[in-house]
Each structure stands twice: as C-alpha cells, then as structure tokens.
Amino acid sequence: MPIKPENKTRYPKDWKDVRHRILQRANWRCEHPNCRARHGVTGYWRKGLFHRLPDVLWDAGYTAGDVVACENGEKLKIIKIVLTIAHLDHTPENSKDDNLRAWCQRHHLAYDAEHHKITAYRTRKDAAMTADLF
Ligand SMILES: [Zn+2]
Image 1 (cartoon, rainbow, N blue to C red):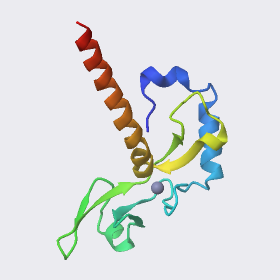
Image 2 (image 1 turned 180 degrees about the vertical axis):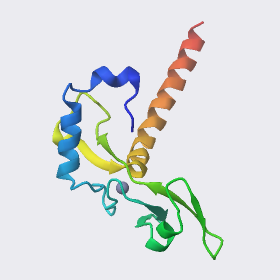
Image 3 (image 1 turned 90 degrees about the vertical axis):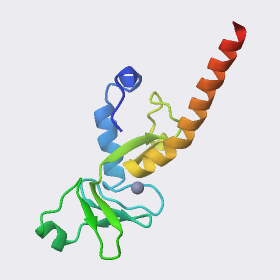
Image 4 (image 1 turned 30 degrees about the vertical axis):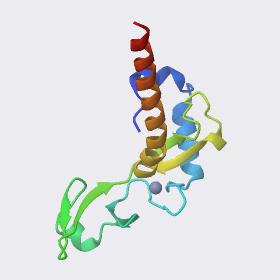
C-alpha cells in the first residue's frame, strides 16, 4: 500500500531499510498462510490461488491490466504482484519485525478491510453522537 501523505511522519526514518529487511525475510514472497505469490511476478488469481502467467500468454503479448477470457467464459484479470508491508496492529509507529508482514496486496487489503470497517463504524458513530449533542 502506498503510504498516505498524512501518515508519512508516523513511519520510522529508516522505513525503506525496514521494508527491505522484511521483504528479504519473506524471501520476496507473500507471508500470508497458503499464499506464496512472489514480488514482481505477473499472473492472475483463480479460486483463491495466484498463478504465474503461462508462457503462451506472455508470447501472445498479455501483460498486467489485461483480461483473459477463458473458453469456459471465465475472465481472469492479469496483475503484477507487489508485496506490501502490513502492520498487524495497524500502527505505523510499531515497526518491530514481529508486527510486520510482507503480504501481497490482496492479503494486505483483506486484513485491513476488517479494521477499516471498525474505524468507519466508529467514525459514523462519533459523527452521529456529535450530531445528537446539537
Ligand atoms: Zn498473498
């Protein structure tokens, strides 16, 4: 995930080094259980698993952003894996290794989605309570 400008100061000054160390620890693969998607590899998700783009599609000129229509009507979006660093506690200031995971965007987003739901609910609730005060 790109760091939001308003959160930039919450990351340690050596964040680039920290990020690189975590990616090396992960051997440049997603650390989420049952996912071994490798950083920089182009392919597609199908039934919850990442598949490398077959040579025949490379040779045909397919690349990230394209959609492949399968014979069975299924459409597969071709993507390039970008590993991101997730904070398990959602706190950028806590950049200890045991709080960090190298995850593909799919797994990072899924992990953060629950947190986003809770914080969005809190924001709405706080706004409603504030409205009740006036
Ligand atoms: Zn993953």
